[in-house]
Image 1 (tube, helix red, strand yellow):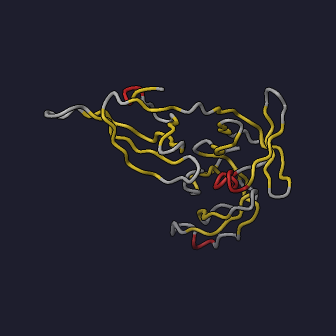
Image 2 (spheres, one colour):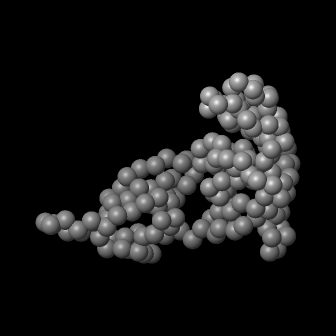
Image 3 (tube, one colour):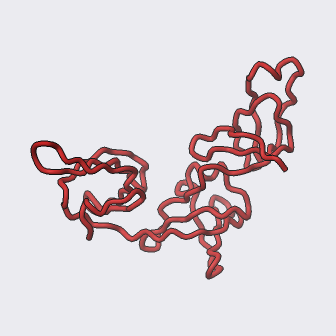
Length: 188
């Protein structure tokens, strides 16, 4: 148990009949009149739904101990992503639904954070950006280079994004894992 005064971003709370909610942001408010309160933005860990919730300051809330571990993505086994715990070398099979959007940016050997609660995998968390190789893209036309347009490109993971016209097949680029957007070239 903790109080609303102890809230931190990323903390996981057990609310509404045992549902897990992650604190996205919070703000302590002390109005001129009336008692202080805490305004929060919470994200449901399983569904991804985001809600705003207000608590009275000092209210007790139940916290959930979520185990976050860095694991290495090893390979695909049918519909399951297989991760290896780097400390114990145990293998963990995670279904595609749980991996979610992170599946678009996972390559063998990559080390994302896997969050678990009571032995169940909640989600796979990637860094804000990753570096991936362009598997295929059409060549840009010489006259198009200065227009600032974009063209589709398939990454080594199979995910397709829009890239500037000057990018070619085989180049390594930086991709934002939150939006799936091109961020820039990686100088080799």
